Image (cartoon, protein in one colour):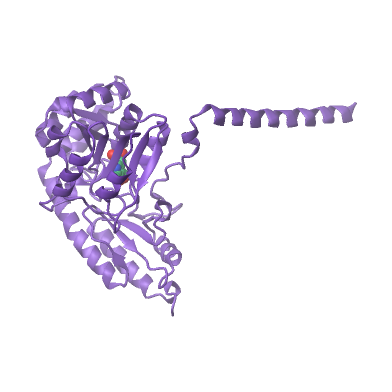
Length: 394
Ligand SMILES: Cc1ncc(COP(=O)(O)O)c(C=O)c1O
């Protein structure tokens, strides 16, 4: 009797397992095949367990806190949190329209610019369509394209920069969207205005071109265009922007896009009903008025773009020219052991971005932090590069 009982139990367990497996397979069969191809987005590391005073240079955030006078206003907002925020983000749109001198009916706001990028693929991507992304580009574009069911076509980059020529070559009858980050993450390169205009003129106007300007504010070169001045000439272009970088609001999640009225109307239909929270809307408006904060952040970044590149190159590494708030560094695998360098940085509580998952096995990316963080980083890196354990031909 007892034996039978145990036997029965075992049987039930086996059956349960089978059912679970069947269910799992069923779920996999239910979803769009392209979703099965997605590798989950892994953000830059943010913590070392148990460690304090970690220097986080892995996600291109601002090293600055927003001005203190905004804290009080933001804190008060908690009293309104029983009510939904304004679904249209009307007041924020007005602030953006004033700051960037654009029409407020041509703006959409989102829960970070990644929300808006995803609205774009939901609206314009579909099964049997293609989305073109640049090699060594932002890893979220392929993810959202596949979620929409589209096939991702990769255009080869040229000297670690986005190649407009190679993108044009990849255009087919199935192309619906082209993603370009300008400046590009993780390489820090830019496309200059003339090249961008030439490119837009050659893309058929039934293809959406997204110009992702997450790092636009950091560019001081006069031959650069963030694309905003081109919107009224190209009805198929969408410029996306974020408050996560120069405006130091990565934790609040706020982004926006600017495009033709028709495209914005479409995206407004696709977005969530209250996609931007109360805090993001109000604080976003307030930070746009902080001209000195913006100025200080641009100047700080400009200084460290140059300093970082120079010092890193003096240490025998190869830091690429950057237009954004991070620097791409090549660690020659013939000369140095990258994994030992990464380990030693971690030991010193410094987090940077290993770019192996971007297909850049010999590279790392380091964000511009505060001056204190940068000095510490350079001092630690100097020590590491003098350590024989990192050298291959000792
Ligand atoms: C090129 C690019 N676009 C968009 C984003 C997303 O920014 P957010 O969703 O915080 O606005 C990032 C973030 O790192 C980025 O590098």
